[in-house]
Image (tube, rainbow, N blue to C red; front, side, top):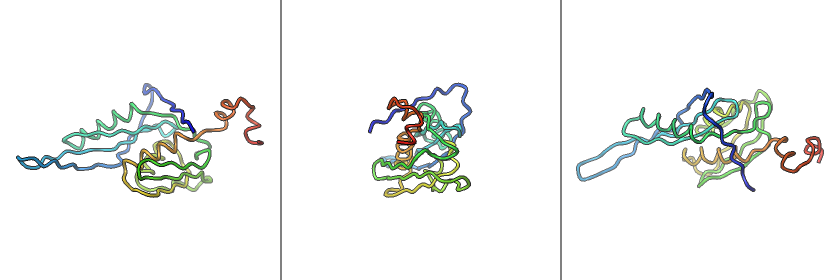
Length: 171
């Protein structure tokens, strides 16, 4: 199944950033240890546009700001229907596997850690999510993005198939 990447321009967007994970990286050399930091950051406007980025630097604040800049370069549009996702979706990236399921109004975001940051940044209010396999935040964020980018709404399906919108629901 081919995924269509829906790129978004960053101008005139009010993006909120969330730090998913900060890792301290140690490099041991002849002269001793040098510490640096890597940060995974998710940015989104909480209305269907989201992106993630990785920043690396010798200081935490610099790593976060580099991550934000990287995330702004990778923005995509995700279809949201009444505060939830249009259909169930499974995706995997590396050892991380994620399962997303639409939920009724009032359920909230039932997800943990890295998945929660991504789903809240998109603007999804009600969703049931399960992480299987690896809990590595890098792979979890990428697997969640993979699942979100595979989502399609009824309008997109009717355009791709060349049929009226009513036939999409009635079969």
